[in-house]
Length: 523
Image (cartoon, rainbow, N blue to C red):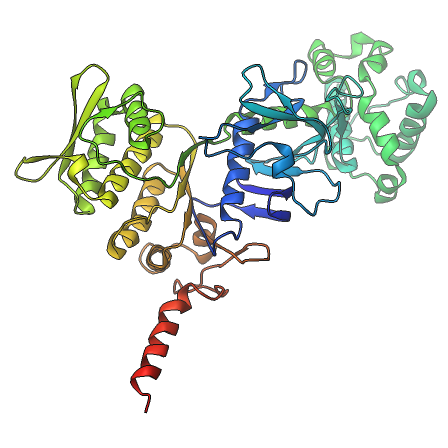
């Protein structure tokens, strides 16, 4: 996911498209919308990844949008009615995101009854409209739905830009010409093709097109440029008609002896003037959606000081983490285990870890020092336990070898400032080590973590010789004001920010110190 935007979801009437980098840090006051943005991303990914493919076209398709309602879920939203912005005034909730070169946008039917699934653990509302656009070709696929969530037309509509339609036609004409050429300078005539299609609206468009290009189909057709006046003269309605026109009807009237079997198969495959570009767009969209990131959410949690952990305990985050870590075979990945041990040492917690299974269903985690002396994880401080859980969660993401966005909620909990600072190093290293496969969206109140991100940026520019534009693409810090839309802080070459934080973050320690000085100098 490259960017996300939404309207009328929880706190935000309008959340503009937010670009995401490799490491993204969300900073702001309580109730400023950081959690809302993260929940929107997770909700989107959770839904889109479960969408089925259109039976005919293969692009993602769904009638509905699910809202998780499990009270113990980090996605607990209470359904559509509890998620719609209080000032929406009947306007629908809508979402949009970009992945690869594909933009997906859709809105939900407002005011419709929510529906429970067969399990009764989630609520679903119907989609009203869905658009999927290839940002390179500008080809857009439209799904329109009625109030029951069924497609109005039983099919999808396709919009092809005029310029791309012309390019598609030119490509087809060039192919025909190359097939029929006997000599290098022989011109190709469309006279045998035109009469069969001089009918209705299609005929009108084609006749106009033919008049424009007639006499220009010479040996240098590869350089053919159609008049701009013609492009502007074709209406959107005519474009849609022409884009749907089956070129196979035209080819059936042609003398097949003059047309190679290869060309016939090409026409049959693409079917119309613009299908070459439509086909390219289909393939790109499917590839982008297939490469859409999955997600891993590390919620803020209370660490339990247990010596024995039941991995079936759904209410304990350490238990859930251990269950996933062991169940997915991460313990057998020596490279990933070494990574965890390295960071346990870097963070001055332990030299390495060991997981034992003393009896059925119960596990014990020991942390060992450099002298090989073991100590149960449960006997460590809360901050150390939380760090260990975070490292295991990161290890799970690395081991999967998938494109994953890790959402991390307030990782600085119960940590000393020096360790909060090192979290920035951890996130940046993982993103680099995985070559961008594992990315982070971090919700934090830690000044130390943000300051260290500035240091990392300055070092990347000065020592690693990265450009400021590249760094601002890779690392992003967003500030969430209390009553306004979030905005990027944007790094300078020296790691400082172009924009300013709101009050109560960077300025808080300075303000307190200033007050102390005033008190010290009071008469």
